[in-house]
Length: 307
Image (cartoon, rainbow, N blue to C red; front, side, top):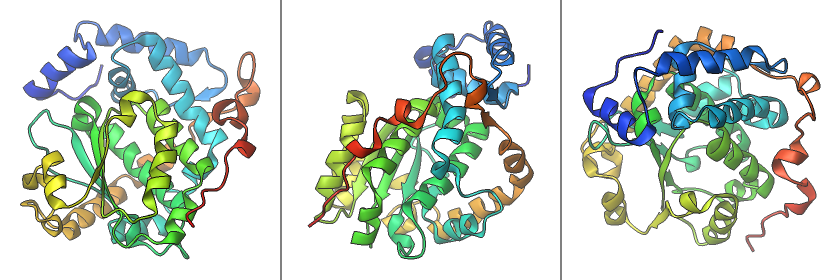
């Protein structure tokens, strides 16, 4: 069994909150691997470190882990727009350079959640789409799932900075796209959502927020907040970990961006290999999954009206 050792703080958190028992990890991993080997429709990354992320994300419920793995890889077939930007696409490098999605290097405490800042206003909505942005965010999340024990065990919180967001950005946030992104983040990815903090929200944002909440479960709906100013934000995320551009005491967004450009380049071969994984619904035992069974009838999702 090849799994990174945890810090004492994360080890204790995993024990208390995720039901992690070091004596059982090997047998639980073998159980999941045996199950994967019997799924003709799935092509799954199955190294120990990757699979333990799913076990931790499911609090070591073996059945829930199987469900999440199945859905995670099925989405690559049934929601291809969430995976349209590949590791070698120049658009990925452009999004990284803009700092549209940045992962903060510090956490409030050794067992506190990871924090990310989403900044859609950094890119031109007439040239780059929100669907592309979500696809880029998915690439970054995949890298985090492979190596960030803090995010996997303590969870992640997002600051969504809507500064410079235009009506063009908002119109691209269709209910169809929101539904797919919610299913991925809430139901498929083995991550613990600890909070979403919206900052610099435009007046038209309330209607979009209402739609976002309609797709979330009650627990996650209660973890969404709108910050009216920096002081509101500091109550949720300490200044000590925020970038300098947000009045924080950490490094600049440029330093964070440069780090992730370098990190992505280190991951190129790993990301290339990752593209071969997914599902073949024609081989699924029983009834194949479809976009309709996962997301509902598309015609029921009306276009948002921001007039």
